[in-house]
Length: 238
Ligand SMILES: Nc1ncnc2c1ncn2[C@@H]1O[C@H](COP(=O)(O)OP(=O)(O)OP(=O)(O)O)[C@@H](O)[C@H]1O
Image (cartoon, rainbow, N blue to C red; front, side):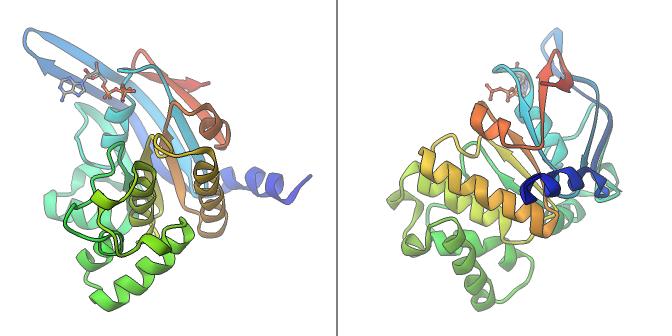
């Protein structure tokens, strides 16, 4: 058995980092209710990587938003690191997110007027670190996603894949315990996508960071420890 397989087998024994019980999201639009997630249960362990696949409109982004506290469930509960997200008021939730959760959005959400370095450093500055300290760490993490040479460029001067790599660096800079990714390799060529996968592997192994990755990329999904399919509001093994 390779070292890689030994590590993968060991991961589910880690503590439960993310827990959802009876998670339900109903959109009330006009006369008809749209139930996108229906009493969904999910557990993700520290160091585990889970892919969520499903057809367009099946509710993958809705699920990710609930897991990260960007949206509130109609019913049910999300716990991250043992804490129920529902207990937090907005400012406290923001702090909790900054401490525990990294996001990579489908559309990277970088700030246009900041350089790649400044964008990647931002979560640490929000957390109260000095600009200088934050930028040293940002330079390091940009190096890990192959973006050291482009650190001084603004998003408008970068390609789609380069912007995505900056967004990934920004999501990882706080050493989060949970990273939520919406189509992280959507814009990337195979080589860059492979380097992102390698980085995720290393982080899951060395920092016990857990990943929930929404994707249509079958190679990316197959690379995760578990693949779940979202269909008719429920999750099942794919
Ligand atoms: N704010 C909203 N109000 C009403 N309906 C919504 C809202 N957001 C999403 N929906 C609907 O909920 C369903 C799930 O949307 P969601 O974006 O979660 O799907 P998805 O699986 O991420 O899709 P895709 O793969 O196309 O990105 C869709 O039918 C969508 O139209």
